[in-house]
Image 1 (cartoon, rainbow, N blue to C red):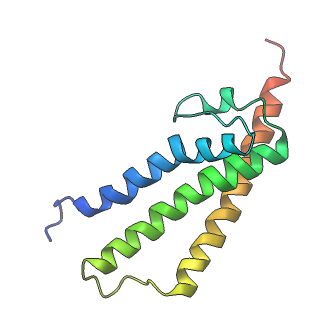
Image 2: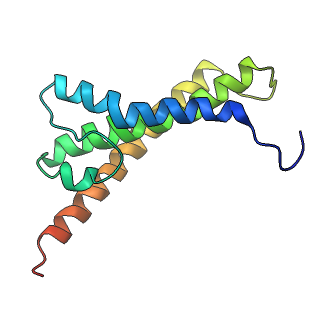
Length: 124
């Protein structure tokens, strides 16, 4: 592969991850009674109605964390399916990716929620 040749099989996990984050995860959350916003833009403003635990769990872990897991694990599994012998697709590594991204998603959701709370208290 040349240095500037685009790797087209990387688009599949990106499209799946964007669909998960934008449409599928909010639809599942709404089935459980959590009003998670659809789409990619203005989700912070539209998700202000969520409590902090709901925000951390549904937006952080479920939406953001599983999006990143789908992106990284999907790309790795797709590379292995296309013949890349160096792609690590062991069950332990995939499980590690799942736990890592769920945890990191929860932390990022918590940080974003604290940031929202700090900026909503300001008087303009």
